[in-house]
Image (cartoon, rainbow, N blue to C red):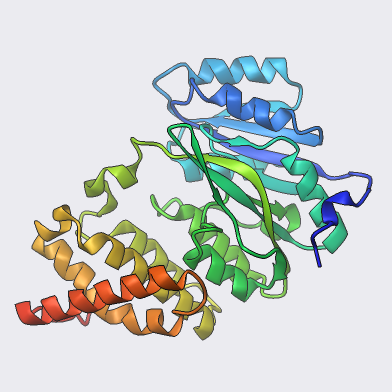
Length: 336
């Protein structure tokens, strides 16, 4: 149905605001910005530098002088959420996108996004993306292009690794998100929470899932996901789980949407519970065991949405965790 939409001719009257937080990115920010300004669309590029210890601020200044569409701001508060919120305050475009300073766009990706917006009168576009690791590009894309509703989008954001919870491969109509801001209470999954909050507040919108890769997501070997201890808070609870549980408390969240969020909690818990770090810390293990027991039913209900082989594997691991916990005499903490 949508195979030939890129061949449609149209006049592009949309202006894009692309928000780029910058922190210790002196070696990558030029590549990032030039991938945006080369898109040949009406642009506002918003750089927000916050507390870098390298020459990122100098690079931002140079880029803002070189390109008329590039604006440069500095944030007194650190953190990607603060920076993105400044960007949202400054955004003037009809369409808002986000890019991380070490990532970059594919050529002509914004023109393709414009064609989707104009042809199908939708509210958000989710583009496919490449995961870049040591020069290797791995495509993450849905199998079928289609228009989905907010409920299906929540399912995809929290459960589908081909869509991801990141905001960086997504483009939003400004009117949809201009009253929303990123949570400064979250240090993990703040993107996912932002996405789900928007979808939960706008239940009648249309979202386009595109197979066209438009974004290069560069994996950082120094990221928190590669430093296991940082994934847990002072109460030895997995920060990803905290963010997902916060989603469950959003006003107006429907029961069927909560099933998918609970299923995502189960998946994240099971993927982390077998690590040596967790096994060496009994309090962390007990917390994750409690979540495994609490959310396994939701996972079973959502089992057949996609990636069935991986889901069955995780279900078997989760069952093994529960059996091992029962043998150890671990009980579920009813206060959680």
